[in-house]
Image (cartoon, rainbow, N blue to C red; front, side, top):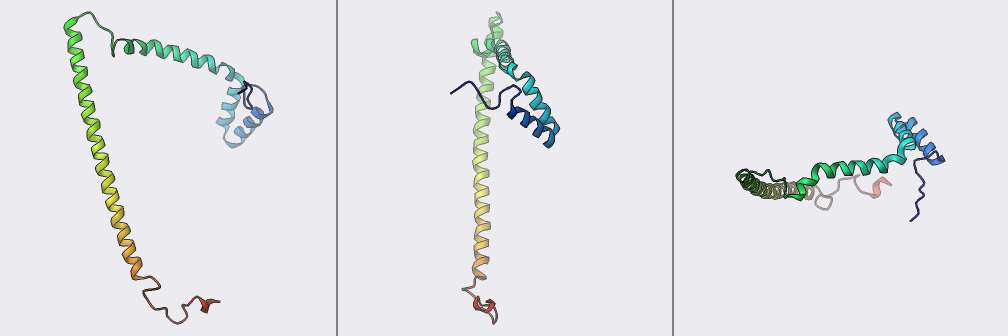
Length: 143
């Protein structure tokens, strides 16, 4: 795979055409394309900076099993018990949600089946094979 692309952040015919089309269709699209042409080469730097900032914010939580220790043994034990209790409650709620989703799917399936059966019953009452065609209703009469 090459490093060159058809739509890269530069003044190429493709990007200029997309910018013009963007302004014609919906002006914010044109502005977005113009911003991409002007500052698109900095997106990689921005993405990298954002990733570092997120790692700095949430990295300590992952390292210490959720949260850093405070130094107070009693508080840390209480917090770990509470977190475990909350995790168990979350698991129970997820199981209940899955059960309800299965119940709702079964209700929808039963309702759909009932509607389909009603449709087929009404259709079978009025099918051409079940009733005799009246005079002037035949397919060859229309030709």
